Image 1: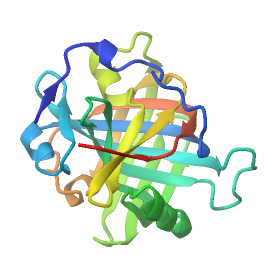
Image 2: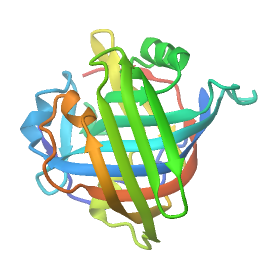
Image 3: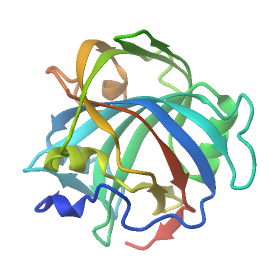
Length: 249
C-alpha cells in the first residue's frame, strides 16, 4: 500500500514522542543528505509485510546520508573509546508502519568499526556493514568516501563532495518529509520492530554537490541515479535512541 503525504504537520520538526529512557546516546555531525525521487512501486516491492512506502506528492524518495557518528555511549556512562566514533554512510527510504507512524527503513549502513556492526545487526536487526571510510574537511568542502568490506557486495565504493551553504530559515514540506523522521523500522524475526529516535530540530542548510561517484544506492537494489539529487546539510545534533519494540501488523 502506498501512502501519500497530505499535511506537513504529519512530520513535526521535533519528536512528538520524546525518548525518556534512552538505551543509547550519541551525536551525528557533518550530516549530508542526498535524495532522489523513485517510483513508489519499486520501493514497496522491497519492503517487508507491515510497512508501506511513504510518498510526497506521489513520489517516493531514496536517500544517501553521510555523517560522523560521535560519542556513542550508554546512559550514565562515558563514551566508548575508539568504538564510539566513526563515519557512517547509509542508504534509506521512508515508510509508515501498520499504525501509520512515519519512519525510516535502512537498506544498508556502512561504518568503520566491526564490533558495532555485529552488535547492531544482532540487536536492532539493522543491515550494518564493515567498510573503509573517511571524512575530509577543508574550509569550503566536505568529502565522504566509503568502500565496503563485509558483508558483501565487497569493494562497493562511494565518494561525495559537498559545499555547505546558507541556513534554511523555514523548513518546507518536502524537507520535513525527508528529514523529520523520529524512528526507524527493522526486521524482527518474522515481523518488524520500531525504535524511537529523539533529537533537536535539524539545523538544515542548503548545500552544493561538488562531486559524486556513488555505487551504494545501486548496490542496495535501486535504479542507479542518473540525475542531480536534492542536497541538504546539517552541522549536527545530539541523539537519544529508544528501545526497539516488536509491532504487530
